[in-house]
Image 1 (spheres, rainbow, N blue to C red):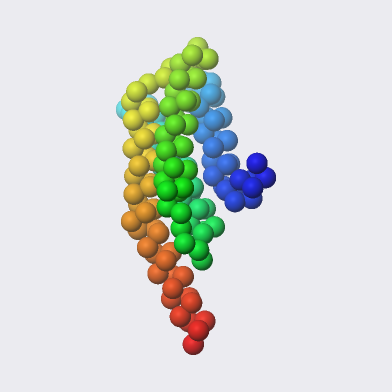
Image 2 (image 1 turned 45 degrees about the horizontal axis):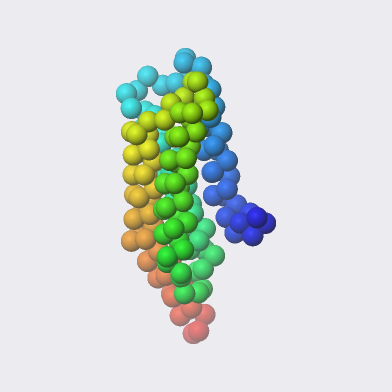
Length: 139
């Protein structure tokens, strides 16, 4: 467990926040009256979690060959499974929250979007930055 705390501290904080918000009982007055605002919140929560998992993973392996299968499992599949489990628990363990397929879909779309951005934009940027730093040091 200590390994994960050292390697993925921000991601673990995001997971704790998601768990808190998922089971928090808000007053009806505190929620914004914007249609489908909660779906946007779900998208952002799981997109943020997945994106941060990618960033911490890419930072950890910045000078090594990346085991890409691990990051796809850890940064995409695990947040999706976590979101499904939370939706089931909300439906079965709380009287003030219900599990919704639309919430699960928003969670999945957030994690998928963040993973695609991380893989196709952030990962190449980090690789390019590292190779340019190596060239500068070798001069």
